[in-house]
Length: 623
Ligand SMILES: [Zn+2]
Image 1 (cartoon, rainbow, N blue to C red):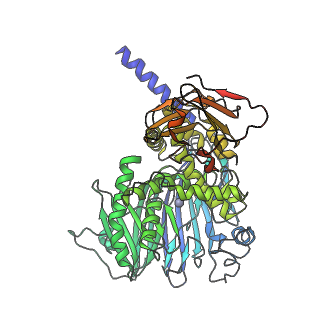
Image 2 (image 1 turned 90 degrees about the vertical axis):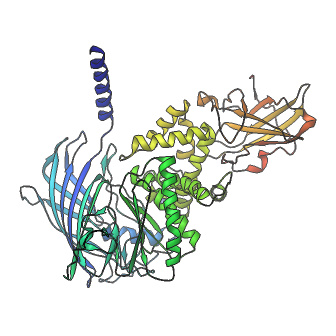
Image 3 (image 1 turned 30 degrees about the horizontal axis):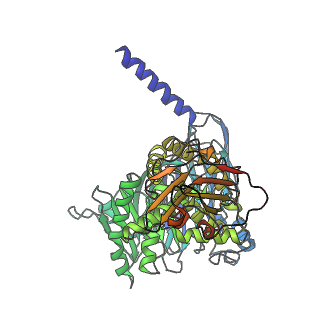
């Protein structure tokens, strides 16, 4: 009994320590939306309960009013026209919107639970609410927000009647509470990039012309009333003949809510073995065949992710033709459909995988876009490999090449750059998606790919329904690998330093071959090196960095390797005896797996000895 008690006490203490260490705000939205299809407008009543779990008292609250970005002169308009390489989908389109084409969200009133009016200020895409008295730490507040909105002509992501003629792509459509975390408020004016939201629950009732078919975040609560393929075929439909139909959605433990509506949507479903339903909503047109063919791929994608990354926890996921690129939201995605079949599979896989790297791991995408887009891209190509039955050694070769081109043209900015502040769209894209994906793949090179996979699974399990940041991921990877990884995160994320190693010199010795390596780039890395003899036997070595305080123990990309002395990175040269006869050597190559983002891969394979300059200080292996 005593034993149990003390164990419980320890458990309690450690839980309370964890709870003290991490907190996040919480919200529940109940929304009643009345949609006026003729004027592309809607009115809304939001009943919000906001929980202040932070250690501070708050005297203000901030909300996003994204639709206000779609007005001439908005920050998004000016940014889209003045950035060095404007996005061709936006350019000056916002500047040319007429009064009936712009978007707006206009707050009519905000009341607290006593019915008292709260004062507020609309400042472009940010609403600032002044509380009558501070919201104390650990307390909650109820707000009733009345608002009106006009759906903009589609410019990016959200909007009406886009080029694929989807009536309404309803994303960033409601006044959304800004997130407050250990770094403070994130009341970022919207200029067209990333999102960050408060974890919570949504009950959304949408009254809309009964001709529309809807899909979105959450589970439809009145399927027998709305029909359109949501109903249980074994039960009777309760259709009514009124002009408007009220769609009731409910979503728990998500950080955003999106939906789409079109009168011509076809609605099909497929079910995973564990019961999760995948919905597909798309136009009834010549691309129907693609959508039918997509279903088994989407199913396989979810099954693969469930097995290798952790279980998708929601009852449904909807793939909806939204008509503009692809964008992830909790429990749904809005994607373009008018492309190739391969494109449709690839974009669906990418957005579905965001259910893990965005839907479950609510990283601040604006600050750490590489953890969101990069990690998603990494898993996307692994999944596509699986879906297509390919066995490619490095499925991210295209991403590596585009990163090398970025380095070459000299416009690289650190991955830690806030998404809004990249000087060019091009640099943001290559950095967030490709360098972010390389970050993970290359981390597998450092710690061993099996350790990486184990770490990713633990990361998702430990941080689902939360807001992890780079340090949280680093601590898990350090824990699982037993290695210190500060240097890797600092160098690859916070600087634009690059990696370049070469096989510098190879010469015969009495018993074997002396190999000298040289570090040319500023970023140090552990080195895998493989020697192939004339009978095609491989002898593999791994040289850890001293700052790793250890080495990887196995790696499926590098079979039966010998670990050499760790390389103190300040030494530019490193020498080891390869125990393979010089005359027998066919090839010596650094990292045959090509996971190392070496910006000059040509000198990774020994061709000839390089001239020595000066008197190099060489570190010699002693293992
Ligand atoms: Zn993405």
